Length: 331
Image 1 (spheres, rainbow, N blue to C red):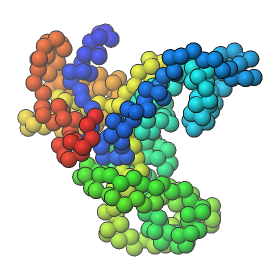
Image 2 (cartoon, helix red, strand yellow; image 1 turned 180 degrees about the horizontal axis):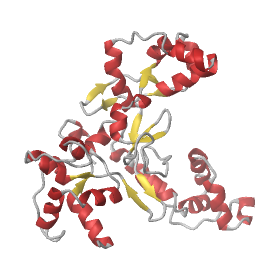
Image 3 (cartoon, helix red, strand yellow; image 1 turned 120 degrees about the horizontal axis):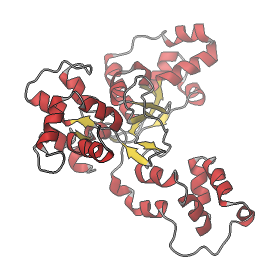
Image 4 (cartoon, rainbow, N blue to C red; image 1 turned 90 degrees about the horizontal axis):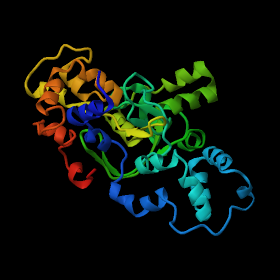
């Protein structure tokens, strides 16, 4: 039976985080956050001399409950009121982890399972605010998006009417997908899910289905563009465990990469070697995987149970990232 220290050491030695997955979606250079990160996380060191008015009549426990019912924007506005409000918000156990680890998508959903499968969900599809794994983000039709023009054409209404009736996302210029496709122009995109819901509201279920399928002559270019649009509408989002106060971003197995490089064939429940290599786990899920991964176990033994140096693939050292973005955005 492994104790807590052994479990942490096994994860440190035999797993790694796929940085290339994070860089395939919306992201910002962490250096952009540094000028404000300290002021967002901590209250001013000087003592507060101004009260909260009538709110100071309430006990701190009740103020905490009030703060937890606020949306993030309202909480930020309240925090900026004065030093006393900064102290109240800064003392919230849920606030600091969200600010420290989730500035790219701070409205964290406290769950670990992908909406569409049982895998660890290290990402969020922003138009529908759905937690998902990278594999579903890459391939699931339920997480598809269209340009505003393409969406209007598909449902057969004017662009103006569609803009009024269906939520859209204004994209950011960056490089997206694992193929590092550059998109320099900002555009409006719409989730297929919202497109279907909007058609249902306008026409009812039967006619909505017919309307959504009326223009099925989607061009080859549009079909090729849709997966990239999905990445433009998604962001990496860590999982925050409320019980342990720990943050997980998802890990992959170094041993499975070793198996690929050594030409070994796996016959595991995770499928082919590349599927096993690309799968992302929670810490708990990885420890279960470790029990049958011979290459990960060999690496653990070679490291003298985390006490000595060991050799690992260049792929895992670089987090699977070998492109230009690795130079431009350093995590």
